[in-house]
Image (cartoon, rainbow, N blue to C red; front, side, top):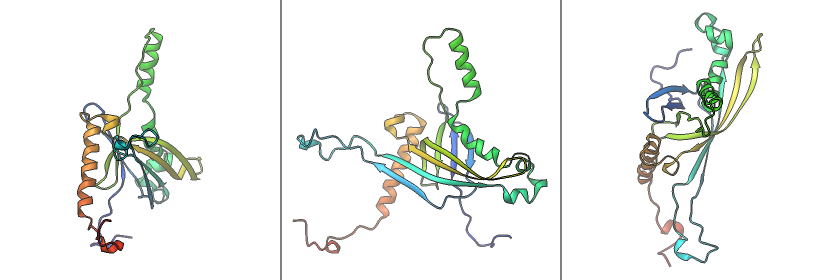
Length: 220
C-alpha cells in the first residue's frame, strides 16, 4: 500500500559511528521502526556539602547531569521475505545482518584483538585498552548525542526454517558522554556542547508561568 502523497515523512532514529580521532563517518545504523517509548533519566551532579555544614556549596553543580537513554528497537524481516527476489540477504540470513550491525558496536574489532595479542606475545608490558568508534545516538536534529552503550540485550521472537532470526527486539541502554568524559577539544565534547546549547535554546521557547498561577502575590 502506497503512502498518501501529502503525508509527512517520518524521520528515523539511529546510531552513527565516527572515527574518534578524525571524526570521519564510519557507519550509519538506522532503526527499522522507531520505538514507541524513549526513557531518559538525569542524575544531578551536585557538590556534596559535607553533611550540610558547608552552606556555600548547597547550590553548586560539579558539571552536567549524567543522562541515560533506554529504548526497545524492533527488527522484522517479514515484509522482506515476501519479496525474496529483492531481499536475498534476508532470505539467506534473516535479520542477522541488522542484529550484528548493532552488536559489533560493543565489540573490539578482530584486527584490534589480533594486534593486542601480538603485542602481548612480543612481551609488551603495558598495552592500552582498545579504542571504540565515537558513537552518536540520533533522535531528530535536536538530539545528536555522544553516548556509550551500557546495556544490550536481544530477544529473538521468530525464526525461519534454517533457524535464522526473522523478528527480534533489541533493548539498548546508553549513557550520554559529556565534556566531563570527553573534554572540550574532542569531537564528542563539541557535539555534547551543541546538544546542551540546543536544550537551552528550546528552553527559551517555553512560555514562563506567573506567580498568580501558583497562588502567590509575590515571593515571601
